[in-house]
Amino acid sequence: MKRIIVFILFFTSALISYGQDSTAVAKRDTVPAPKPNYWTNGLVTQIGFSQVSLTNWAAGGYGSIALNTYLNAYRNFKKDKFIWDNQLQVGFGFIQSYEDGYKKSDDRIIFDSKFGYKAVDNLYFSAVYNIRTQFAEGYEKKKIVSDFFAPAYMSLGLGVDYKPTKNVSINFAPLTGKVVMVKEEDLRVKYGNPVDQFCKFELGAQIKIDSKLEVDNFKVVSALTLFSDYLDKPLNVKVYWDVNVDAKITKFFSATLRTNLIYDDAIKFLDKKDKRGNLILDENGNTIKVPGVQFKEIFSIGFSYTFGKKK
Image (tube, rainbow, N blue to C red; front, side):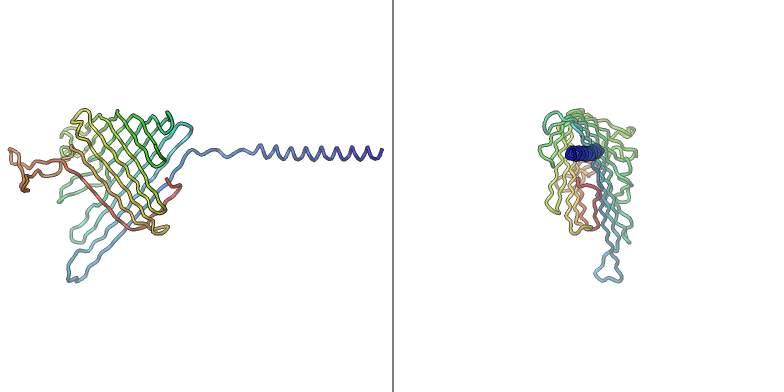
């Protein structure tokens, strides 16, 4: 009898212990899993500063203060077959010479947005949006040559996006609408708009190639855009090519090189000359303006820091 009672007590205690363990396991299993985060974002900041002061300097020269700043913010979304990439680039720089006064050295506002739906591996149906302009007035020989929304370029393209690797994206948009905006009347002809036309519409095809190379503390980012206007001289391809090179020196300091190349046959800013370098005038004796390749290069060493995840 005693053995039966001991057995019953042992069996009951085992059931209670098992029940408690099961309850604990059940509680652990019912702990809610963290919600998935489909967004990645970050901010890259760069600032470079230089100052030159001369007092009774026999060799000559000019004192100056120079500042270059650059921000690159991105916020990207990816879930199932959908992607949505957004990037904002803002840059501004100036040189304040004690002799020649203030001069702008860099000025840009560029926003890119791309929405994609996966069709097959590495291929997406896509819509790409872009707008670029500048903040402040720009001068050449004390004459204004640019301003906020003078000019500004806005485009929307529909097509496909091919990503052969993680760091390369090739976007082809055979249906791309583009708007050229110039709010200053005196600058409209220079940037290809009629004097009485704030906006000029273009319809064409666009190819945009984005690539990135990153090795240890060295990174190169390239964005090449080619646009052909169906409505006006489609063989004259417009070229926009931006390259950013960043070499980390320490955690907070880096050497950066940014270049911008533009060719747009609608932007006529160079004086037409003959082979001997003589000006060619029109029938009214005025200089004739022609397009040309525009190139800008900015090199700086200064503070640099990245917030958020690396892109």
